[in-house]
Image 1 (cartoon, protein in one colour):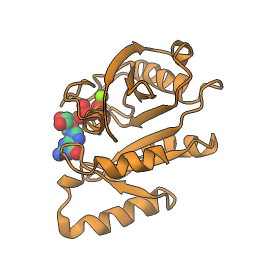
Image 2 (image 1 turned 90 degrees about the horizontal axis):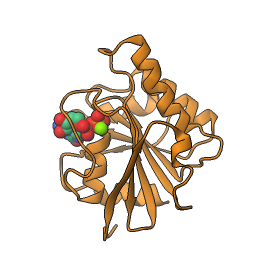
Image 3 (image 1 turned 30 degrees about the vertical axis):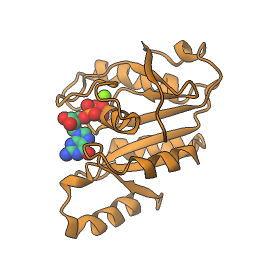
Length: 190
Ligand SMILES: Nc1nc2c(ncn2[C@@H]2O[C@H](COP(=O)(O)OP(=O)(O)O)[C@@H](O)[C@H]2O)c(=O)[nH]1
Ligand SMILES: [Mg+2]
């Protein structure tokens, strides 16, 4: 993918707030807090700092919208499953995510579900995957932070992840490394 332009459009807290976007395809990034959603967006667009990354989980509470090449939108969603926030706060974040992901008037071109290759799929990951499949969303699963898994055990780790995630295709990825983005773009735009 040749990136000519990548711009931040807005940050919102409800799916209704993106209904005024141009009628262009939307690619959404979803996953646990701190799994590397923002890093993946920066890697794919090759714009460092486009999406704010943080080593502290639970920082993004809003839906951030980016316009790429004036052709499609990348949607950075808040992370779920962060244990250190209150129940009320967690429910609020889930509401923000669901209001966008399952909005009846929004059909994403792709929903990129990012899981941690080192940690493996969590209950929250499975829950969201099941919901995405139930809503017949076009899902792409990235196993990010593959650099944290020893080379010799990567295949075993990926096979295990795949089995847990109902045999869905899993793409190993490392948002921290420069390479690998081309394969992800190919899958996203399929
Ligand atoms: N080792 C490693 N660290 C990563 C990778 N992707 C993201 N991180 C780190 O994980 C932390 C959270 O990343 P961020 O993109 O902010 O996660 P988000 O909360 O899902 O948006 C940051 O400290 C990143 O540098 C990766 O592929 N490998
Ligand atoms: Mg983020």
